[in-house]
Length: 79
Image 1 (cartoon, rainbow, N blue to C red):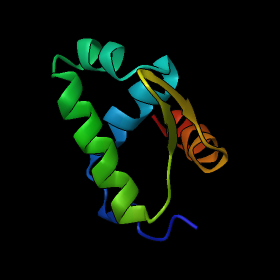
Image 2: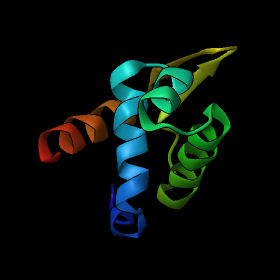
Image 3: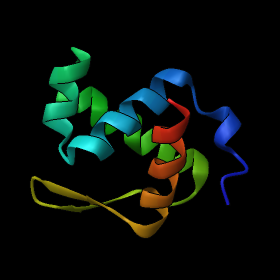
Image 4: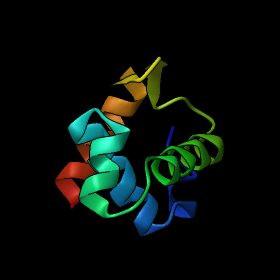
């Protein structure tokens, strides 16, 4: 399922991990010292490369999809 994971930069992985752990792009941005827009763009880039949706977006709220959660488990363990 994550055969394109090699094409994701380590920075992209860090952004995904922070956003998934904090369930908030703005909080992830603050932790990583970037803008929320930069986090959102990085997540969209990852989703496009993997061809899956990692987060459900409802207004300002985000929630990991099932696929996103499985990726998060692997990424958080690796980091």
